[in-house]
Amino acid sequence: MKKRTETYQKTKAKHPERWSGDIRDWTLPEYVTLNPMDTAEAENYLKQQSS
Image (cartoon, rainbow, N blue to C red; front, side):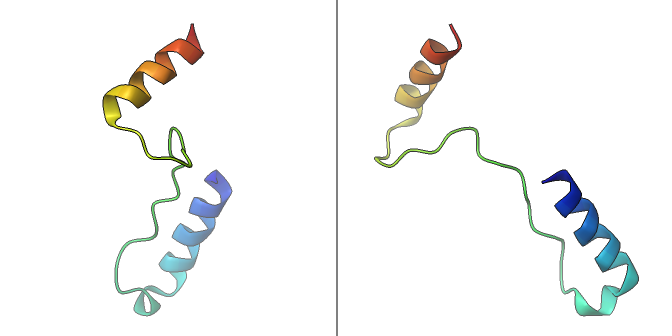
């Protein structure tokens, strides 16, 4: 993802007239769930996984 961000920044610098705003935020989420859970439940799960 780091290279993708760099590529977008270089492209925006070369042709700023083609861009109406900032580049996309390419950071990956900390976790992804199929069934949504509340924040407290997710934090407890992450703590258990790191132990």
